[in-house]
Image 1 (cartoon, helix red, strand yellow):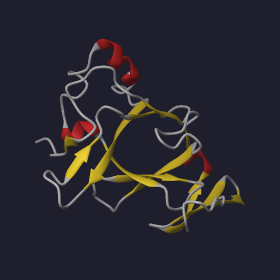
Image 2 (image 1 turned 60 degrees about the vertical axis):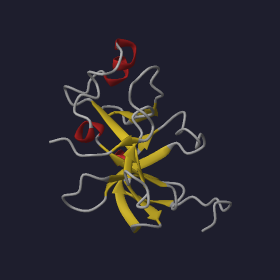
Image 3 (image 1 turned 30 degrees about the horizontal axis):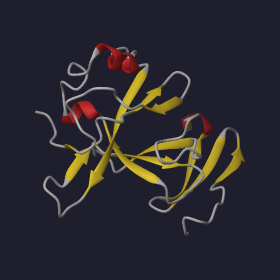
Image 4 (image 1 turned 90 degrees about the horizontal axis):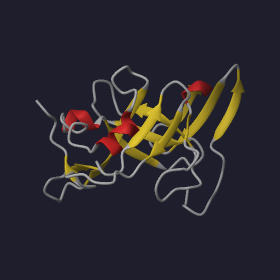
Length: 160
């Protein structure tokens, strides 16, 4: 499907279930309460407001943030603390506010991953623009941190 085609890739199957068409996973049946709503969209994709999180494969640290409306729009994501265990401690207090609720499991933080096998390092994660999700109301937001030593191409090396 080309980027210019706009087709709704979800079908309501009743009983709180949706079928989401994806280019990576085919058609998947999901519960409607798995949908995460991004009122502002994501950076560069302001019109895409509904996504699901799909595991890459069992046991993997990687997941996909998959649009439910565009089958070809999906981002590789990871828990940023796996690659940078002191991530939150390094942020100024004004930016730490975005992460309220992370300790008690009410908030989820994700980093978008870039994979370029020909580059060194081949895996990087965006620690300047994390995706923050309130797990209680399923509302997400991509934030831009004001000051940080991290970059949008922070090397991804899983912390020991």
